[in-house]
Length: 115
Image (spheres, rainbow, N blue to C red):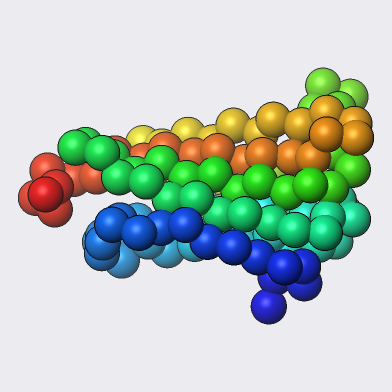
């Protein structure tokens, strides 16, 4: 239900605590909705990767992009930041007019679930 063709690369990520999965899901969903609603994107790609102490992810679209320095942050973008910050994570938004947008995030995985 992304509204544009979507590919997901998450092989080998495995399961995580539900609260971490929910936070990442929320950020990915918000980024996909933004791509469909504002970016005029024709494709979206989601990548998930694990390392020994964390989970990183990217949501990349091929839309019209925007100038982050000249664009007022909406509630959706702030909510993404807040959602990850609640778990000690962070989010970065990279974009340029005509160059698409990439939303990147990283969360540390609690030691009890590291493999």
